[in-house]
Image 1 (cartoon, rainbow, N blue to C red):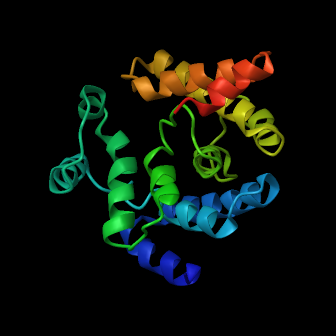
Image 2 (tube, rainbow, N blue to C red; image 1 turned 30 degrees about the vertical axis):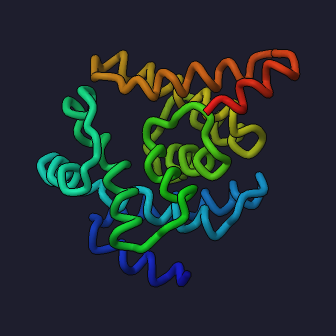
Length: 203
């Protein structure tokens, strides 16, 4: 796939700030994939497309969910912006003709995460959070450093930061974010080899 053509195709769907974030996320996704042994082409594609629906209005996101028959949870009805991930995955498949399920899942889970993510999912979830154009975030330097050492620990820190922020603002919390935090926190705590294997295979 021609990555520059994909970048050019996605650009009209975004404002300038979102497009810069997208390119920055793509770059970090590539770097993390290279370091952690993931397919760099898949990481680049998912990085480019992860926010392709982010600039849509709440009304448009709900309309697209109806169009693609995507389920909408109670929390997603309260925080409609969360829907940009699953709508983005639908766009990736329908508009950008991406048929790789791992890429589609990485786009779908990049905001809330989920227990038992694939390596590519972990990379996109993390890259979206740590890319250098992000506004200052608590512990961001520590998280960035950890992302290149241990993705599971970085994901735990990201999910904890997200939960702390949402609790401080009183915004509704998607249960997947809680489940992601609990899963990766348990995974990174000292366990027997058998326990770690069981957690890793839980999907």
